[in-house]
Length: 207
Image 1: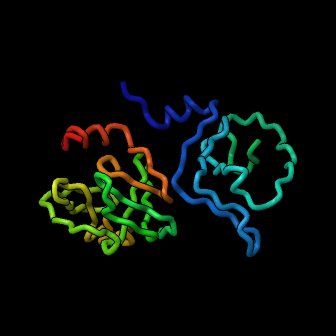
Image 2: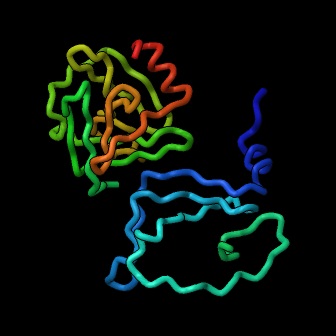
Image 3: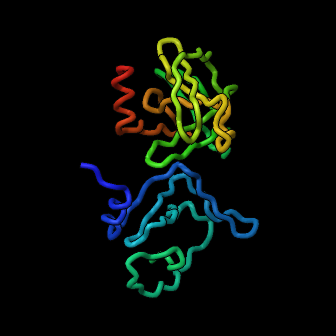
């Protein structure tokens, strides 16, 4: 049985919902950075369609003062005016069977709805020889993807050599399947993605 995404959102509208994000959230007051968080959450308060970022208290570099309580609202949906009751300078390291195959502080993070965050690295930050593959796939948002293999690992990476106009920023950058390599973000190993894509990859490549 299938459910429309819009219907699912309405069905869960009364719940407090959250989703981790790989985005680095920073906030400034004048020339001073007062928030710098790498472990933020997207939080949907009950009755909200638009989320807010939530950061850890220890990532706030300013004194926190109690806010005036928001006036109660009986609106079925809380709009954003009702108060709440590119290139990255982060390090990305890719390992395969314990060997470092790529490392970069210039990765481009690509966020796509309901898909794992992918890290696109400059090719010069890949420390192993990439072997061109005959495989091609097409994304309606990014264009045609070319695939790359390593010794013993077929089609482990991909790139967009001629992406669609809205995605020229990733031209020639290389992304690796997080499901088949170990990805370390800021020195911490990420949990491999799950879901249908990961299951299909494991079936195809027997990993």
